[in-house]
Image (cartoon, rainbow, N blue to C red; front, side):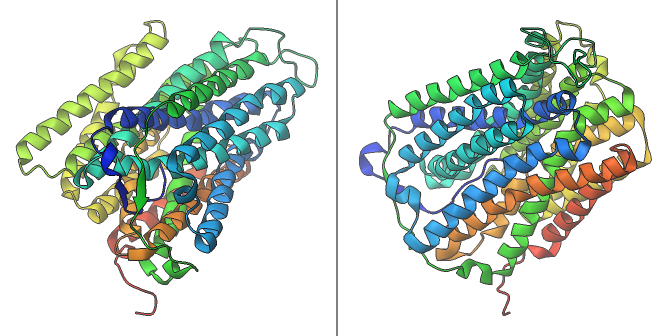
Length: 492
């Protein structure tokens, strides 16, 4: 998922204007880390599905717990801010970040007793707490990145940070999958099913409790270390220039309320596809988890490629030739980074021919950016139509064609969060902060849509035809990019 947060106007105090490079590096590390931890759910789902013998719908309670926490945390934040004023403005963004890191570290640490007691409900509680920490972390970090430097380059900094967030989601399936299904898979006592037989991966490796305990303990330690780093980093102090409005006046704006629906469906569609990919690839071509998770890196890596391309496409450069060449070069470099990460992790046994088809979709992505003409609404519409075509081909075909079509959706998901968010808060004035909080609550779609798609997959006996659910989501996004984004109030 993309980074989220409040976007109110801020001013850095004069004594710290020149000292934002180091804080920017530290915050970018946070973006990277929560990208990793959020995408680990896609590894956790097939792991828990095996050890608890869950149905497809039951396994999606992982995402429901995770994104319900985002909704709950954001709702609480919105209620407090609408009645008492912005909490972050009162406690400071540095303290907000530290609180988020502490809660996230606690959530990761709770995976140890959850696995030890072999309680699925305990895992869901741990995920809920972890996601509450990430919610606080993101609400605090995103606007901070926006003010760490000149206002005219704020969008560029956010796109750069989100690109590193996507780098985290790209590497998580590779590194996390390796630890869970391979490196730690045979450490300690093997897990047993209800018949007392060892639970194994699709490649026949035994699965152990340590397979999930140790990776999340490592994540907990990393969050603690990041907290120490943030604590000892001198962060610039800033004050808000925006008047805080009370009540729910932002809901009078039609483009905001329709944007809330758009965020709900976008996050739901993106998370749903990513969550089921490992199991879906197994259904399509019989690849085990240890191999399928390498292909998952191209879904999330597509977001990274698209976001970097989007940052270039939406830049102020007037030299179209230079911009186009930079985009092509960036796409090639990003593609090779993903491939070499997979190649090295596989033990230098992952031939390039396996992922060559992805080049076709990168070219399609570049063409779609060209058609979008650096316009947020037009690009959102074009990318939504492209995803609808890819989903239709996925349903109508099988095997490698279906697999690569669904994997390439990540490329076109890339700019959707930033474009929808920007369009939805346009011209809200003093209601901008309130509108931002309402949009953040809409990530609840990440809890609801995956469960709905998995429920249909259970009914159909497979994931293939359940992809009509995300088609509904992206059809609405096409409408929002075409007409729903137009700025006006409901009374008009």
